[in-house]
Length: 196
Image (tube, rainbow, N blue to C red; front, side, top):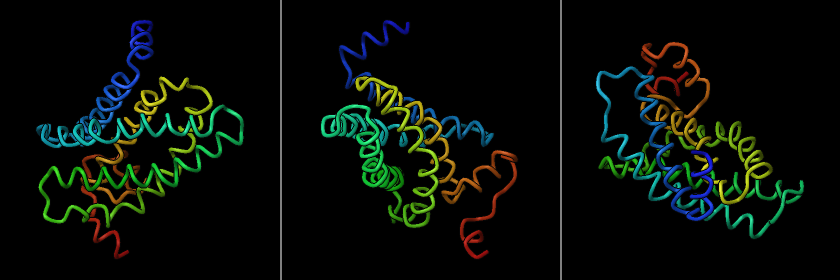
């Protein structure tokens, strides 16, 4: 199976990477809902997350990673650091923004920037604890034709965190860890946490 996947990824890198990325990202939402022990899975929510992942995140990351490699080829320390810097200053804020606004748009919210305003900065700071390490491994160890797919594996965990943050968190790892320890516990509303 691994050989078949690698052969397919070499022959059709775009479709393979984007499909795997989108499926893993949507799987993050499904996992969040399962961990939240909801009575029923909200398939509309999972669909919205999948639409954002397939239409933007998977495609953007595929072409972004290819562009970075073309501009800064190789695995030398200087090239990897340049790619990491650009990834965290351009791609990360854009991807986080599109997630919050895209899902809000698909849900038909009146103010699609509401979640973004409330949670973007915390989410971006949390991402700075996660993504540089994951992307470092991606840039150093993974061949270019598989980078988006491998990034999708990392994005599975990240999407689980994003979906939690969007539903009941505030974009911080502290609130997410408190929820993981006790998923049935009712977290205070984001407004109440901000007042503290």
